[in-house]
Image 1 (cartoon, rainbow, N blue to C red):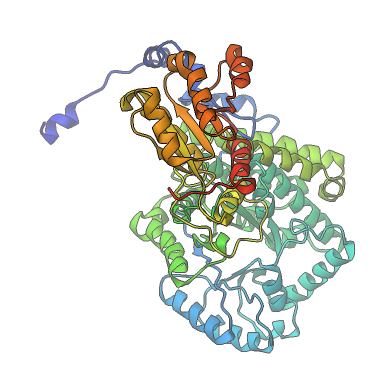
Image 2: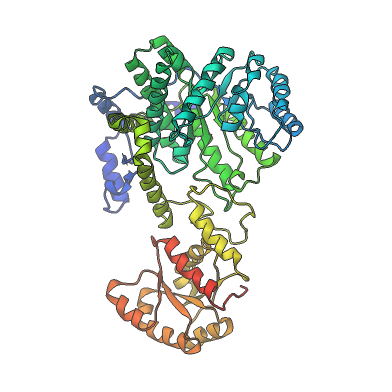
Length: 598
């Protein structure tokens, strides 16, 4: 077809009801509701959104802020990769190298470096590069703005500080008071540095939902404003000194909606305090980091892809600073290669995908606008609930925030364990050939940690654990279930040795005699289980009475007691809790005399 012909083509319009009818036909009668998804924010996501969904938002704007979150400028952001080294000389060289390779923000962590007199020379040299500074690390920020030399660093601008509330120092009011004194002193000498940090990443990395993160960020912001007012700061000054930091997870549109919604919600908070509108528009400062909660030491290169998607959504939402963590950060094996890949992720999104030339790419999307509004509405309600209880400090002290986040985290882990959600290389498509790194992250809150613990148990065994898979009948009949079992066992570090086609009792017994594994899974059709299971279990137990036997597929309720009496242990099936089953199976090798090479 010629281009001229293509331009003249038109498409007939279809109604929503026509689409639903076609969809239900494709779903073979399941209904549109089967395509709906419930999120951890208690939001019901539909498969299709129309302009009617956006029009319906007008009916709720009388009691919540407008949180459409449109951007008024192209997404220009600072690449704020934090650089850490073992000496001041190495740190200076690494930071200069990063700045020469596309990083446009001075971001570093002093870590365990001593002799802080070196910091003065280090900063004086690097401030001359005329790039903003970004540090929300406690030790680093205190080393910068908590020193007398701060008056010597004129011309510094950017973000320097940390969040005592989200980092757990709220229990000691003296610590909060000391920090506010540091902030007041720094303000005298560094007027262009934002030092009041609201960092919601710790809540995210404990498993919080998007609405919880927003509610807590708003509540912290209010707590700091109130504290600064008591020190006679003007509202405008307090607002201009504040900076908000978020972690961005893998739910692409939800994370995008979260940050878009926050901008409008915080505008509403500042407006309610009476801050001038002109100040509000320039006072909102936001940074983001890629999530630590959803990163894994298992199949760690996949973390590159997760980080890329998270960076993409953060940029589309319009953050001012962005940190993409190196893919191997959670295993504490960061090196120049992983730092470069993390930095180049942002460079590609800006310079090759041209995201720095687009104004609010999500604006106008029925789904994005609706979701931003819905997230904002629910977050606003949670924020009001915290406020009614007495504010952020009260809710932190009574443990209600921690318990609410824990419930969401537990739900996330359960959904991963039952494969309602997938984590590539962790609960699905696990790679048995890789080993966990010797050094493990000190974080106990990552989503993958229960699976890493299973793999660690398997890795500690003297010889690798191997299960025997007995394939009943022809390969094409039992292969789907055998493949599923292999993948299931791999998540816990258990290898599988599949038999040849077992077309007779003799074939089965020959495989068992040759292998002598402590654990077998029988893979076949349901009707074969009904006809042959008693014979199979009895025959295997005649060879070794201690062998544990499962079947692939869920045991029918009406057969469970009968099959268990004949010696069947259980089964492996879809939507089963992997963590519970693998814990049971690994004990076979941990407590028994069996560990064979595959």
